[in-house]
Image (cartoon, rainbow over all chains, first blue to last red; front, side, top):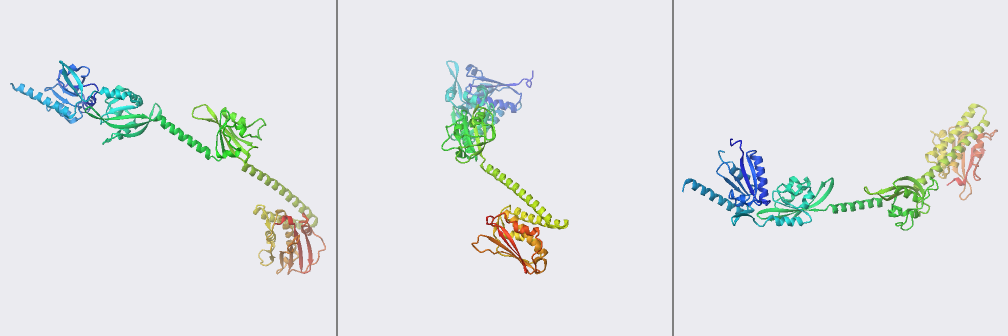
Length: 95
Length: 485
């Protein structure tokens, strides 16, 4: 299975419906639709329902977006309203 | 320490710095805290539950939105107002899920800088009916997020009540300004409203009385069975009554009316009474009366004229020996009659001056020769009856003068003027010919002379006498005093 046919996974950690969580979900959806259609598979994890899942990526602040693959792992903290910052962090040179 | 371990430490340090910076900048609103080896979620600035609960007990629609217009929370009241389910709108842009007029109003309210409470009234359609809301926006800090609280207050009832009141005021003004009498009755026929024009129908106040009692009517064109209460009863049962002529014997001023009555139905409600309108017919009645009088007068005049023509015809026939003579004399007399009729018609059968008749009858004999007819002081008015008779007399005199008298030669002339002294009980006009050939008393008494002497004898003060003076004919015509003005 090649990387191109296997979408890269993004995990967004939120805390219920806090203002920043709501904004991060909506902003991420918009960015992936407009700039990277089909390249990422998105999973939203609500830590308020299951706090233990914070351990996997050592999440401290919410909301946080985690790009696991390709390595190295990257984290973007905040509501993802700065589109440029999100794109720079996700589109690493040469990928 | 290996290079990879150093890289890992650098990465973790960078991540820790990013986290601290995000917390400082207010980019996050919840933290994961380890407690007894179990992670817990803590909201910065308190949880959302408190403000959610607060919004739910508000009795107006309310939403918390972020500066971009994203709905952070909308209470149940608002979701029912705008017709969407609570789950579907959180995180959505309020401008995308609201009716366009609401979205526009919110766009205007959120225009920066939003410093204090601002409000706007908005109207939109919901389930096929028009609803009205007042939107108010106020800045709000929700943990680390700057937000805006928007409330929706339903003012539909108030707006509708105002519109209804406005409409009722307009309806009252319409009724009050109508020229016709307008009376509104309830289903029992009791008068509830009247306008100013209706005051001509009754003495005092009619409100609270039944229509039948306040305005008893007689319907001359209907059978005696129809009465005021029947008009109202028909309208209340849904049958409009249109334009029935009625007489109101007890009305203090106008008594003749054209009555109409229509059921009063407000919206889709049942008939709640009737509206009676009464148009003043007195002017129309007077005009009809005047027309009737004129027709009778015309009939009378036509009959009189025909009788006169018949009389002239038979008398002329008796006095003329030849058909040509008859034709000439008869035509001349009928033309004389026609000349006076023309004058009367031009003056709408009002009174004519003596001068008018003299000039009209002599015009065919004196035209083109100045000074042949001299008149003085003939400005008195006379009634049509006298004008016709006087016209015939002048015609006979003029015909005679043209044949045998002053108008038969150049230089002859006729002077017409009043000769009676002031205070005399007669008014006499003298016809005096001069400058003509010598004349003598004719041996034969023609019809012309009969016309002259008898035409004005319909009155005791009317008549004429002819004097055949040798220097010229003189005729003294006495005009009926009752026909002079």
